[in-house]
Image (tube, rainbow, N blue to C red; front, side, top):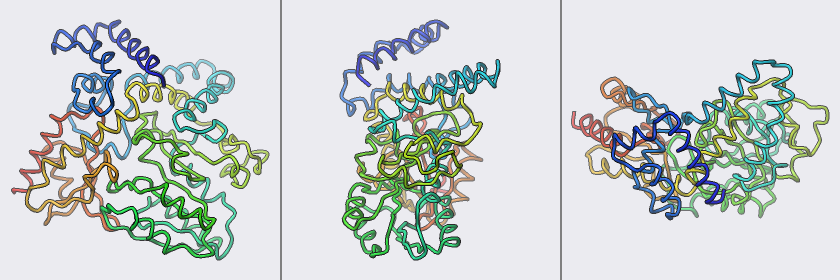
Length: 431
């Protein structure tokens, strides 16, 4: 989105706040020229905005997060800003005025505009984007839709998401394909080591590999493009699990040079719950069978993957407002802030005795997600104390090579919030 578009969105947001006197109230109460800060900072390089707390305070006020619980598990599902909630509720009310007409003839037609907006954000053609309900549906469309036969090999990692692993295992049982496993250390800060791990698993029978662009358990970023290039040298297709990178990292899907990509829009894009996206390179669409059969399953029309009957049209249309909100922040600005927040808390606890990290401090290998452990405590014990005593909500992780608690702040998380979390960790470690 052009800067003028972002400034217009900011101006509209400020006007909306002024309509209910919120903007005026906040300015008087906190002594901050929030509207001026927002518009003036639109000209700042993204890296300069990392600690502009006036700007991030306004972003925080766009959410309706509970003040009674500190949510540091945004990696599971992210909250929606109020503008997205309002859009969903509006489309839902319209649909209920006459469902058979409004849902299919009015609201449902809006999907094409959303498809175009998603394609612009993803950096690809709208004819390569299908709107789905989550990453699982998107990736399993490809996993179950590929023409694989007995003996064909698939390379994946032990750190992959369970739903994808189970889907591949089901194909293994039903079709006799062969799964080749990689087990990556966490963290790993060597691109060559990662690429070689994949290459060592390749054989003449390898047909496709799966890459987790960001490993959800630890936040580890994998060099997807380098791995894809190594695979393509041997004629192998690439499926990327982008559940935690789309609208989190500043990239486009073609940057990854993959054939297939799936993501959840209710994570880092802050779209309504139960929204996702599937990308299939145009020349591959005709080769993939849909999960829910349309009239022409071998068509090269990406819309064949949306033949799922009645679903939440209000949720799909409200994706557009989430995209607007994302552009208002800016992709690079958002990535830099999330990286800053992760390093903020990790740096403050790194010298505490018994602390162990499963996440890199380097921005090329991690961003908003972090994972740590306290020696002598199970992840479950640490998670339980953080919530019961401090009301900090996190998630314990006990998965391949990863045995800690995952911490995922978001753009509405403040440094003061993380200071409270850090003090809690210090107390727990000392006890």
